[in-house]
Amino acid sequence: MPRRLAEHGVCLVCGSENPHGFGLTWYLDDEGRVLARFAFQQAQQGPPGHVHGGALAAVLDEAMGAAAWAAGYPVLAAEIRVRYIKPVPLYRPVTVEARILRVEARKVYTEGRILLEEGTEATTAQGLFIQAPHLFKNQPIKRWQPLDENIPLPWNQTLPSKPASSQERT
Image 1 (cartoon, rainbow, N blue to C red):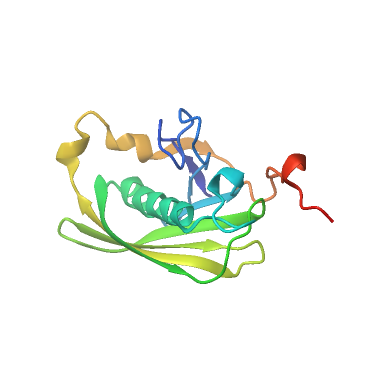
Image 2 (image 1 turned 45 degrees about the vertical axis):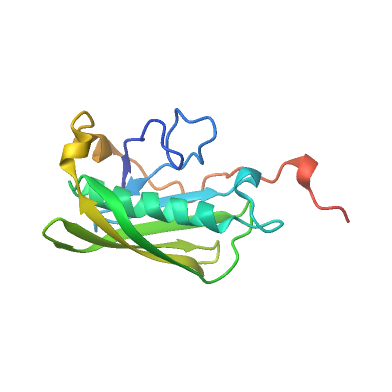
């Protein structure tokens, strides 16, 4: 059963201590995939009504890094290649998935994707992360380990809706 990962302090993507953060909650499934479900908000807008490509890349960077950390690899991103397939609308549920492809010495190769509500791939990414434990001396790896609780994925949760002040005029 998927388990919730501990949150990450001031992280832009998942940190509860960042007032400008995206607010994602990560889950780790039994296959080692990191998952989240959420809706991008107006603060992440790029083209009108759609998500900025940098916000999509940031989420995939964090998801792929979280997959490595949850497997016990203290990493930093060295290279991320993002492919934008379909525009991602604001205020609509998306699912993020990431996993490790392989590990070669200090290199951790990953992949991730963002799926639209109906399951269509909107954005994909491949990442190369480098293990750098010396940079995380004061950050125990266990911060990214799953919490003890086994809880169902919140795929049926109510996500934030479009604010009334930003509704399109008819």
